[in-house]
Structures are given as structure tokens and as C-alpha cells.
Length: 578
Image 1 (tube, rainbow, N blue to C red):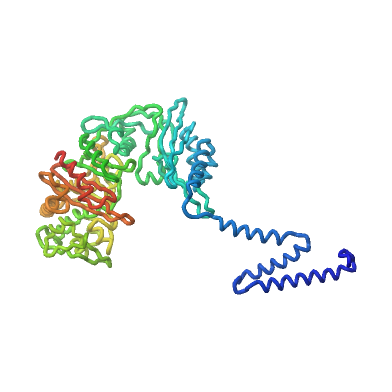
Image 2 (tube, rainbow, N blue to C red):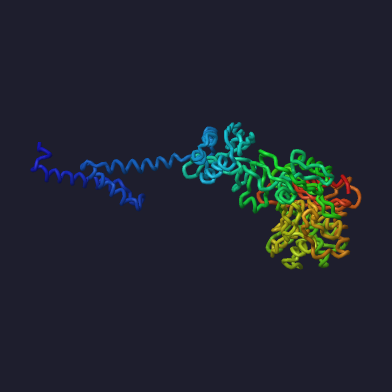
């Protein structure tokens, strides 16, 4: 046997190595199917060549390359998908809450799916809001949602007060690696925060206000839960004008998106009292209390009551706290919009209360096929019958006789809507009736398409029908700050107004509003509405009506037909006076 290391044996040993390498490469070629691996052949063959060199040359290239690829494949296989387990949810929640409680902001932020936003707000929680001694207590998990309570202390310039509230978080799975993380929203830190808002403790720039009802009684959120956002709005507008002095407070300071939505800053905790100024409103305490009670019985209900002769707002209530849907909502009003559309058709001679008017099962316009609820039709009926039964096709059939901007002009010029110029005393949305064409224009005639309203707008519509002239609603008298109220450029003709009142009176007595308006006596008129919303099983139920010198409108989101949902709310309030 030759010595492997001898000089004479070296050439032969080299030949053996070469032969071995050739045999390995041939074997690899036989095992590899080019049709299957395609472009990977070069990599596999190259890998075999490196393998020979590494095996006999003392390196580790082949050994390190192959396991790395396998480890990567194995890692990819281990990425979790699907629903989170209870252990994953609890673990992610505990990681976040523990780090937050311990003041470890980077670690808490890293436990969320938006590290940057979380780090900014959590850092501000201590630095800007001056909140310390935080204790977070986890509640009972429900699916991926984990409630928790917060107890802490707010300290500013030697003054301290305890802070306590409840919040919740939701855990989600990160797509790229399957890791459970807290889904970040500012509301986790405090439920009154919207994304982009911040918490700040300091001397408030806006003095507090003491809001009074029309009789001089104080209005508080404790007594009237719906008025939280209204009181915030009053403070924002009149705090400095009413002669008060600012105190030290923990406040929600609104960000860009919240300001765009006209949300006011909100006081969460008062460390030292300021001196409030006094602002008197037009709210009627009895009607306000009744409105609060009415909406509390339903989910997502909102209502507004006005005095048509003056425009004074007598009551405003929402069953959901926070956003003031009654004043700032932007919802399709459904068939309550037919009050405005009817005034337009009557003025243009396209409809008359007691004349025959088409109400077929279907009507196609702008390549859309419109139909009535339950596909009903009225053969040989009058326009009054179509209005009372809320026949969609009776209105859609007239679309071809109208200009694209006809409805927009009617809403602006006669009803004072869609001009963004109301000055109520607090933030409001003044309705939107955009100029549209084809099918969207036709849909707007029945309160769909791009038309958007809220109960304040629709109560104003009924008030305009009752008095014959638009009077801008207001919560604070214009004499308080010498502001100018919005006006309409014209009124309806006497003939149009008379027919419109006849339509609404007939609907209240014999049409879709009759059941709700049963027992509401005197000079009355009403209109129901149901507005379809994409992705919603039931439509939003609308109702607008007047009785004497009261006008009201309400909406129950996802409630169903307006006569059955919003109708009883409105009727109950109209029964209280007029």
C-alpha cells in the first residue's frame, strides 16, 4: 500500500480524486430531472462540484449551504396562520400591558403592529399627559379581544389626582411571520382617543363653560349623557367669549383627522378648577330628558326636535356616546328625501298631489333598474298615493325631465341645505346634495346616491314645510355673539307648499307613517324612509314629521323600516307639545 503523502503517490492520488469527482457528478446528473427542476439545474450541479472540493479540501461549504436552504424551508413551513389560540392572545396582551405598566415604551411599542405610532403616544402618556403610577389589570378575554382597567395618577405642578378608566385591545396575527401582536389604535391608551389624537395635561387654553337650558337650569353630561359632545363644542366656541378662566386639565387634543371630522377637544380630568363662563342654549329640559329616554331604548338611534317658527333646537339625543350623529352624521336619508324631491316635481309641473302618476314595479334609468319595496305597483293611482306609500319608481320616472343640478338647487335655494354655512353654535354637518348624472342622479331623488343628511337636517326640512320658509336651526341665540344665520334664497310658491303639506298630512294619516303617528293630533305631517347601506343587513330607518310648532327627525341605523323604528321615537316627542 502506497503512502498517501509520498511524492510518488501524489499524481495517482490526484487521478483518484478526479475520478471520484467525475463519478459523483455523473450520479448527480442521473438523479436530477431537468424537466422538473428547470432553472435550478445549474445550482444543483454547481453545488455538487463544490461538494467534492469541500469534502477533500477540508472546507465546509457544502455542509453549510445545504442545511441553510433546508432550515429556510423549514422556517417557512412553521409560519403560523389562521385563528389565534387563547394562549397566543393572552401572551401578546400580557407582553404589551406589562411593558406599558413598567414604563418600558420601546418594548410595549414592539408588541404592537405599529411600533412608531405606539411609541409616540405611549411616550406622550408620561411626558405630555404627566401620568404615572400606572396599574393595568387584565380582564376576561373574549376571542382576540382583551379588556383591561387602568388606574394611575396625573400630576402637574404639585397637584395630583387619581385617574381610572376601562379600555380594551385586540390581538392580530402578523402576516409575514405569524407573530401575535396588539393591533394598534390610539383608543387602546384611552377610549376617547381617535387615531392621531394626543393626551395633554396643563393649563387649558380654553376656559370651561356652564351651559344652561332655556329655563336657566344647568346642563351636565351626568344628567344628559347625549350632550357630552355638545358641551365640548360649546366650550370650544364660547369658552373665551363667556368670560371664564382656564384651569389645569387632562385633555384629549384632537389631531388632523379628528379636526376634519369637526370633533372638539375633550376634558378627561380636572386637576384644578377654572372659572366657567355661562352660555345659555335653546334646549328644553323636558324634551331633552324625553329624547334621551327614547334613544336609550334602541341601538344607534339619534333624534332632533326643533321649533319651526324660530329655528330653535329644543332637544338632541344619541344612544351612542361620543360622536354626535344627530348633528354631524352623514347618512343617506332614504325616502325622507322625497319631501324635497316632491317640492321640485310639483314646482316643475311634473307631479300634482291629486293627479294620476305612474308607479310601476320597475323603472330603468341610466342603465340601472330601480324597483319598489316588495316590488309593489300602484295602477292608476295619484301622486299623493305614491308619496304616502313611498313609491320609488314614481320619482325615478321623472329623472329624464330634470337637469343634473335640479335637486341640488332645490335643496340649497328652498331648504337651505348643502351650502356648508350653518352657524348653530356647535359643529354640524349641513347636508350634501351633490350634482350627479345618470343613475346616481336618479338615485338621489329617493335619498340614495350621493345625498347625505342627519336628523338635524331632516328636522329642518319638516320645519320648512310647516312654516313655508327656511329658518336655520340654532342651539345658541345669534344675539349672544352677533353671528349671522344662514338663509335660503327663495321660498316655495303657495301652491307648491299647500300640496306638499297635503302629501305629508295624508302620509301621517293613511300612509307608511300612520301607525307611528297614531294619537298625534292637530296639524301634522310626516314622511318615512329606509336607506340601504352596502354591507348592512337591515337599512337605516328614518322618520321626519311636524306637529304644530314642533318638528322632529330621527334615524335608527341598521334598524329597518323608518315607520317601525325611528317613527315611534319622533312621535313620542311630538306628543309632548306643539
